[in-house]
Image (cartoon, rainbow, N blue to C red; front, top):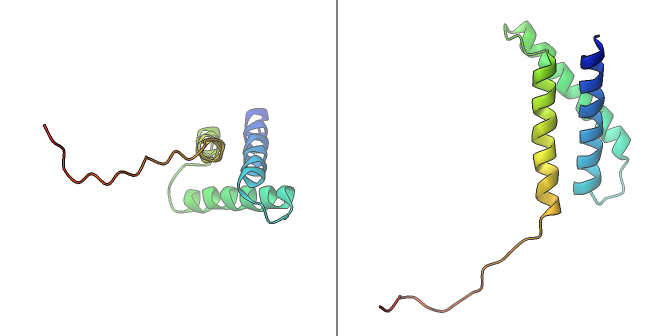
Length: 92
């Protein structure tokens, strides 16, 4: 593995751990979750490589990190609910 590939895999593992910490409240182990999901994603990339796609590279892993970070940001934002009104028509 190249140094950048190892760095990207580590970033993926850390992103998965952070996602578990942000989203899961059942007390399960975030390190175990991060290891399982990272390995599953790497297996997925290998399987796609066998099917003819050349996806096993740093860009695919970094894209997955970006997606996971987007999911994490959803948990950081408060839910804003619109004010309920009983108006059915708009008068000019």
